[in-house]
Image (tube, rainbow, N blue to C red; front, side):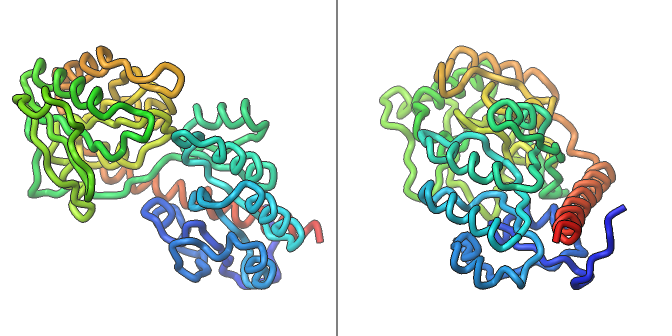
Length: 331
């Protein structure tokens, strides 16, 4: 049993970032989220935290700390200890492209956190091995509903080039994905964001079965729903929000062998791409072709997704209550 708290019945929780589709989904409704709602959270400033610690019961960090120097994160965790503010950390990504700073950030955060959460059992095992912390694996909940008026085009493969990361060869990605799409009787649609361009490759400029369209953030779920297969190009990713959107809308996923994408959703087709060995274009071509031979998955069952979300929120509520109760008992 969690002891009754002498403070407000609604626990006051700072989330970093303040708002985000995942953060918004998992936050228990009985919790009061503390602002301000800035893009860069002022709560990551040790002076701000120290001055306002009495206004908050728990700080929960998901992301949004990558811009900070390593020593500032250490100073911030020291401020948490001085003020007695409980920290909960959800590890979404275990690595960042071309960055050693992310490891240092995680070391400081996980050494301070009262409770560590992550999204898959595989990531929890990696956290235990690399950082010596036990992490609770909670599922990534549903984020979107499929458009009842939308539909997928059989044979259409999609690749969001902007997600490839700095270490990946974009031209090689496009060539391999295109080869798999065409060999499977389909075509490749490359999504580009503002300021992004198709790699300057003469073969791609005249390739058949290749189209380029703008990526529309407001319609991204619908754009994924139009696909038979979506290729995730991340070289050092751990988990993927797009994978969950694809599960929700019924789009098959081809994912790199790095990270824990197959733990996140077992019904994916893997190909070779990681920081150590780089892209294996032959395996990507084969994976896309194999994915096209499979039927498109059905959209995720909404009743099951609702039960999953309720369970995830319940875990968060229990964690918040427990860390605050532990601090009250320890005072």
